[in-house]
Length: 156
Image 1 (tube, one colour):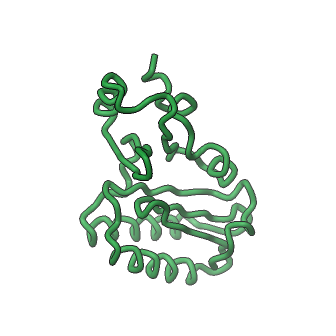
Image 2: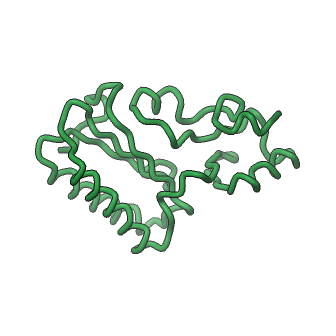
């Protein structure tokens, strides 16, 4: 069942699927509809999802309601179906996702290091920590300056 994000506690699990490219305008409603259907059909599971920056699927699952391994596998299958249907990648978390102005960019780590060297990004550049595990971490630590992120050691 889909609930408001404010109804989920800080320990709720989070799953982040950053896209290799921005979703096209006609793709967002299709993705949203399929996620709606998926979560509405999960009995006794409180969940919430959003698509941020037309590029990142964020899914919250309450830690107080059941979410079985089979349900998790079904969710992953749904994510893989988006990859196939829209010819993009959603499970590559090794890339660095960051903001440049109002746009979200992604780079392989070596390319991000080159941006640092060429001063294309700075310690103040907002970087996404897609390795977080809870709603609390999402609220406090998902979008952070590079100096406070998992890429901070690249600046030394």
